[in-house]
Length: 228
Image 1 (cartoon, rainbow, N blue to C red):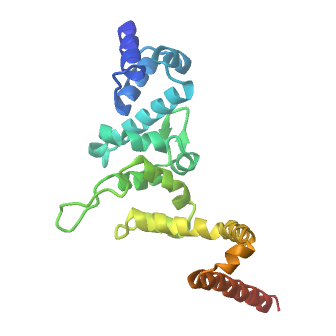
Image 2 (image 1 turned 60 degrees about the horizontal axis):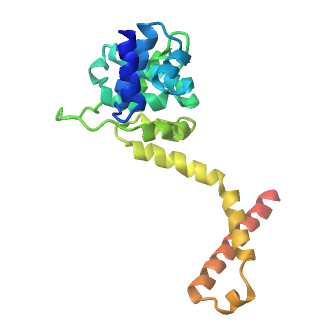
Image 3 (image 1 turned 120 degrees about the horizontal axis):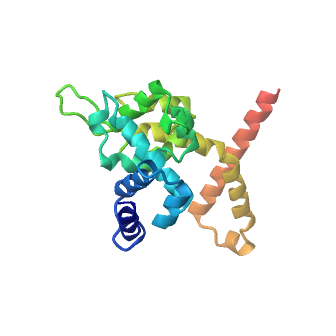
């Protein structure tokens, strides 16, 4: 049976006929749990890297944990696998949900409840339900910036706000932090303007430079006022 599974794994996991992520993770779990193979042995048999074997193992177990949850278990479908595949790979999310490597599970049950609530349809008064806030692995990736921003995090769990609302606030703060980089880029751009460019400057272009000058003057004026 082990030989058969290994051959099927090589054919479907590494070969031309690819299984989906959930099926590949299921095979990894079977080889590790049922046949007690080390991750390195599974990697060798399936033509995968050890860290990928471990990631698939953790993701499958994390999804299985949701399936065992009395309140959210019915929503733990294979289609959610990519979400958990991403979640177990991000340090910020693992820390948020209290990932424990020894039990291969999340341990912060309160925050885990919050996470699950983002993966299931939101209730509506007419009982039709709205789409879950998180439906893709790319959204899970955005949790890194959302979780560290108090306002964005509040919006994330507000039933009347969308995921985009939370992500927008988080990104706005990130952009604000990088203002100095943008200033440096503007300086570099202006320093590259030649005398010929100045001679041929269009009215619209001149106005943009004036905006930059006026804004810089305003910032410096405010700085001097606050300093006094």
